Image (tube, rainbow, N blue to C red; front, side, top):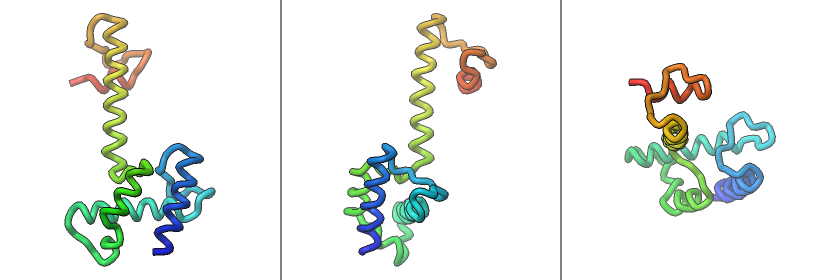
Length: 120
């Protein structure tokens, strides 16, 4: 219980300083916090699968809600994929405004990633 409150407070300080809760495991300025963040995400995945171990029972709905309220992202890969998708849509709209179509060349020099993303 004490560790939980200590880590949540530390994560809040990290969030205020960095603008997000995605502390890396190898962050030397925040020793141990990144590993705790990874641990919490792992416990959340177990909780979602219904595989609640003695350890994962410590992560209850109230704690999940508290972390979410701070901006904690439990499913980081999915969140990042969604963010990249939204950014891609914005870039495609900009391309359409500039060129009048969405037929982006595969090797579009202005934005090579966009050309590769929209190919079939």
